[in-house]
Every structure is written in structure tokens, then in C-alpha cells.
Length: 178
Ligand code: IMP
Ligand code: MG
Image 1 (cartoon, rainbow, N blue to C red):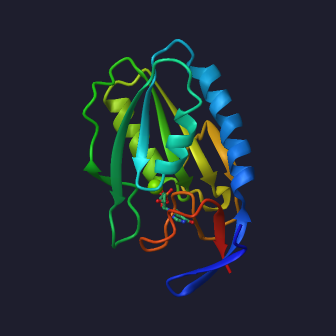
Image 2 (cartoon, rainbow, N blue to C red):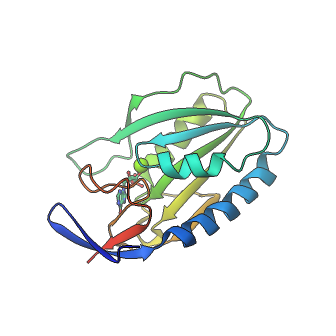
């Protein structure tokens, strides 16, 4: 696998390779499977970044589950309020349901905590968050992330779904900025 790449104006080096990702995704999927067994969960993939992680996780789910997609943007500009804007919202009725949120990365945590609020207000019975990556040092809200693939330092990363200004999502490994 390529050790070093450039995306736009920045250099990145390989941080987590394809094999490490596949191994960990399988473990996370198994833990999730045990959590939701027999409960007909609704999986919600948070676009765009989580598309690859969600696809890989879902291949290990071996009983009926539904899959949906949402897309959010944080409000830009002034200091983060913690509010998020729904670009693509949820169509499903989630009242009384077990919902599994599949996210690429938890950074400040504003996106996930905003989403948890939305899902709780919509009557979810239980919200489980599974994030491929988490930067514990960047967390600004009180948020419990149930399943984390890899905890990483506060470096900007691309690959396996994550982008830098639109590029890098197709990379099979995770690369960190130099
Ligand atoms: P949060 O609301 O600050 O937790 O940010 C979450 C969102 O910011 C993620 O869903 C990503 O889309 C994006 N993000 C945060 N850190 C990175 C990174 O290192 N690389 C790419 N995207 C990131
Ligand atoms: Mg995201």
C-alpha cells in the first residue's frame, strides 16, 4: 500500500492500513451484532464520510436489519453552537426502535450529540453510536460513543471514506497529515 500521498496542497502518510481496518471493522461488527441481535435495528449511515465503514460493517450483520442515510452540516461561521443542519433527514419512523448510528469520526462531538438529540426527540428506544475513528483530545461535549474503531490523536486524516476538501475518500487506508 502507498505509504505517502498528496491531497490538494497537503502531504499525508499511512496511519492505519487496509488490513488493520478490516480486522478492527470485523471486531466492531461482531460487538454490534451481539448488541442488536433479534431487535430489528435501523442502521443510519452518516453521509458522506461513513459510507465505506457502513458498507463493511453491514456485510457482517447476519439477520434482518434496515439501513438508512442522513447528511448533516455543522453551522458555519460563529463559534460552534453545537447545532447541526439536516441536509438529508430521516424518513423512517424510529419510535421505539433500536437505532445504530454509523459515523466516520467523532471530533468535537457536536455532530453526534446533535444527532443523538434528534433521534431521542423522534422517540428512539435506544441509540447506539459506532464510529470508526475518534479523537478523544478534541471532544467538546459530553458524549458517549458506544463503539470506536480506533482512537487517534488530533491529526487531520483522510481515506476510507474521509475526505480533505472532497478528495481522499476512495483510499483504502487511513492517512494522517504530515
Ligand atoms: P465533529 O462534529 O466535530 O465531531 O465533526 C465530525 C465531522 O467532521 C466528521 O463526521 C467528519 O466529517 C469531519 N471530520 C472531523 N475530523 C476529520 C478529519 O480528521 N478528517 C476528515 N474529516 C473530519
Ligand atoms: Mg462525517
